[in-house]
Amino acid sequence: MNQKAKFFSVLFAIFLGAGNLFAQEETITEESPWSIGADFVSRYIWRGVNLGGSSPSIQPYVEYGFGSDDHSFAVGAWGAYSISGTQTGQEADLYLSYTLKEMFSLTVTDYFFPDETTGRNKYFNYNMDWDKINSGEAQTGHVVEAAISFNGTEKIPVSLMFAMNIWGADSRKYKDESGVMVPEDKIIMSKYLELGYSADVKGVTVDVFAGMALDNPEIAKGEPTGFYGQEAAGVINLGFTLSKEIQITDNYSLPVFGSLITNPEAENIFMVFGISF
Image: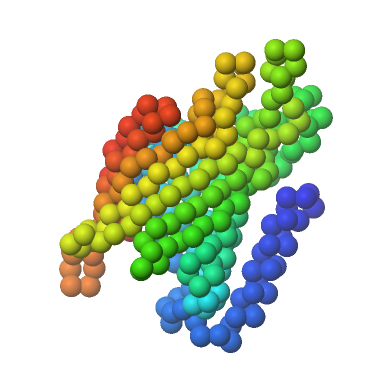
């Protein structure tokens, strides 16, 4: 078993053990611990970056959650699939999360971006051996991220999230050797920070957000752009989302949302409309 498989096996075992540990506590809800759904969005924009090209995207998810009001856990899968019939914007992620008192969360996410045109399309390729990579063997297409967040409260409707890539196909580190940028056998461990504010305005939820890429590539010296496509550290995800539920029947309402998203660093702007099922 490779190191990455061992890592997730241990994490999964910890979550199963935690489920038994907290089974005797008062549960958060009497509803099923399983949840399933999907969003349909006009464009797939993630942290200010267009990952869906010009195609709408269907984004399904499944999740198993358990625990109590004080300690809750979730294991889930999330995907994004463009409906244009091309490979643009395909994604299949797995994640594990722990939340303390509904206020603080720690999440580990394994991102994977299928692409039939590249050697990194193989899901079970976990190669991060730099000798093999430098010799031409395909690097893994997985990116593992660890994120910690303050989720806000009713009295403090402000959220703060810090995320960092800790393994996989992150941007490669470069070093300056006599004016020439040379790749190292390390990853940048790209970092992202996001501040959010949420409010209810006459039945419409307003979420304002500002996200920043913290890594500063040496573009002028020949280093490639960063993990988020940035040419410099700066704000890459600035905008707001309005969401509400449209009552369809007495027993069913349809959640809809719209976002205005800008990427000041890349000088881009996007408008996105979505429906949740």
